Structures are given as C-alpha cells and as structure tokens.
Length: 213
Image 1 (tube, rainbow, N blue to C red):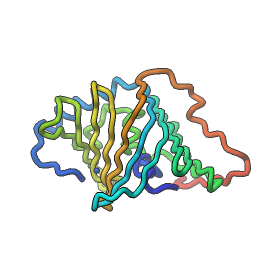
Image 2: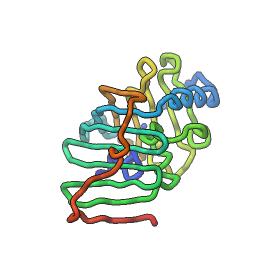
Image 3: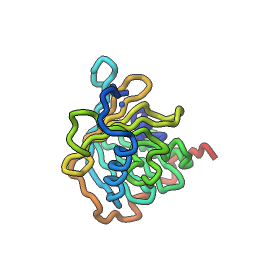
Image 4: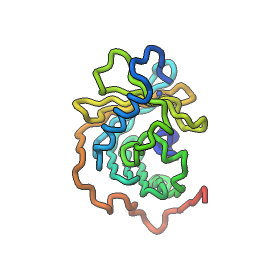
C-alpha cells in the first residue's frame, strides 16, 4: 500500500509552527466542530502533492473522494498509481489493482482519528482527540491547526483551510518532516451519495489479506 496515502486513513490517513495562536483551544474546537457537523456528505476531486523537508516534491497524485456520515469513506487515486480505499465505519479495505491485492483492517481508534475521516465521523468529541487552534492572520473561522493528543497518531499536525465555509485544503506533516498537501476541487457538500459507492468490486482472483483481527 502507498505509504503516503496511509497517513490519511490509517493504512492512508503537518508540524507547523504553533507559536502565536489567537483563539483559546475550546473556542477553536467548537468553531471547527460546528463547521464539520454541517457535512452530512462531502465529495471532491483532489490533487495531492508531497514534499520532503527540503521542499522537494516527492510525489503528486490525483483522484476523488466521497465521505458520508456516519463513518463511510471512499478514496480513489487514479494516478500515478491506481488505488481504492473504502471505510464503512467498521473496517477499512485497501484495493491495489496493480498488485491484485486487497488489505482489510478493522476501524480501530488510530484509524478513526485520521484526517480524512473527519469528513465522515462524529465530531462531538473533537477536543478529546485534538488540540485545535487558529493561527494569527487567518480569516475568521477559515483556518485551523490540529495536533493529535494520541502519541501514536499517524501524523504530527494538520492544517485545515476553508474557503467560503467549504473545506478546500488539508496540509499534513508527518514524523519524517514530509508535508502532504491535499487540494480539493469540484466540491459537493450534502449531495446524495449512493451506498454502493462504499463497496469495492474486485475480481475473485485478487488476494485478500485480513489483519488486526
């Protein structure tokens, strides 16, 4: 499985400087939770660019994602490597067509706290999982920084950017000092998403690997 995508949803899942924060954690957390609560579903095309600590591009990929409450998530990377990742609230399936392999993992605590699932999970307990702040100079309520409180988290920090109230970008920094930037385009909020989107259709010849049981 692509290690960069794993940082976004568990088998997918930024440390930005956190000095000079203007909001108290509680106020920022409540503001972010209110935004995310409005998302019953979220669909978008994405461009993901990964850069290393020196600023050099490591990888660029494109694809689409669909998220639907509660806990349902679809991610399809179309280039440079095809991959489909689906979460149904109980398990995560990762399908690599080129490898003819599907990996199935349970939705444990580590996976449910990953960034992409913020769009499809419950956010009432956001403060328990993250320290949320808003950077000085950001438009009111349009940018947030999240630091996971779990020391075993798959990322160090995450910056969410909204444009006109709609999530437009995620920036995630990992322990290797790599930054993954997800830019969302053609965003659709609260439009119907068919349930069969979250079922992976793959040939019988594909190897299925189940782990974490």
